[in-house]
Image (tube, rainbow, N blue to C red):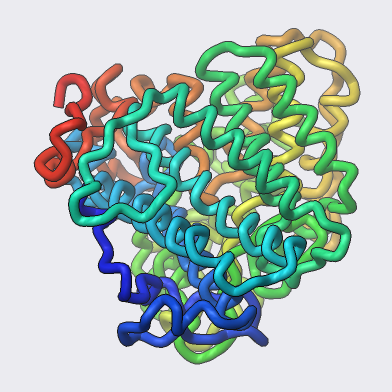
Length: 511
């Protein structure tokens, strides 16, 4: 496959060099050609090479994936081709996912095939290999999830080695899970205490729990679901705790808190900024663009303060839709009925789009100068993994409901306009069935994780896309007509260029 072909004397990490993991370790690999033997001479060089893989870790652009679901609208960008039914083998998001993930795999293989040359102690070597193996496994899973049967690649491929046979979806999954198990062992050393932003065994376990939940749902496999829950329970006993303020969790003041299992570090340094404030904010906030905006479908998902769906609520008032609601609504989306003074920054209704409040830092003083870390895994998601998996296996229990209520309670902490707490009554267990609790859990995932770029996988595995993505996206006004063709669109087309490069690959059905 041409995508993997790399001259063996060229340092191949150029694109990812500038994304190391801590503000104290922002190092740059040379961007000129280097002999491999000249490079692999010290642990510092191993660290630089490992750092380069962190450039492939999800960053704020991952949020656009929510626009492939009913909860978000994108004005522009690669997601529009998918959301409007124009998915094709040349679509930019299709090509970007394929080339990006195989690029990560290539870089990981380059590292793993060369790192032994340095002669590090076995324990130290394992810690570096574990970090890199994590990225390689996750890249394979992303490819498998979207494309189905794909090649497993565990070595650098030469010019004449590119025509790799694809492996079946189940074979790729087995490979990924085995790699994650090996990685957990490699990162379990008691002397491995990495700085914030590094992959740890907890991050690997969070990924494995997530994958097993996804795959257990798709195949109705209780063994996978039980293992997902068991891993989640271990993480819940691993010293993490919910952060006490939902708003601050996604702003710079929440960086490095006890809820975060893994984050993409965006240091407050020149050249390390991103533009999430401009992407999400209304025009009144530094002439922002509202590139990604929530939809009414998301607004309507939030229950009333008692946890009752608004379609059945005695508290809900359509003329004051942000009153008496789950407090996370006001912490995620700005009320379009009023102009908001948000800690000194004005957010004015633009009349068309809804606007996210989540991720917005009102202290920003210039456009395109956001530096929020992007949360990749956090305890809140792990709670939800555990609850969903256990409900599917055993049905509702007070223990599971307590975790949902804990997330709801946290949503009210510091959520009043004066900074005081809003009391959120707990949902009661009485009368809940597996089906009705499933509805609560799914709703909870949607509102707790909105704007974090992972809900597409939930809608995908729940098989809700053919329903939700055949409805128009609506903000304050209708925004986009959408189209999803099932079952075709659940598996993406392999890019045309890859079919030309590798005749062993066969195009997926109906493309």
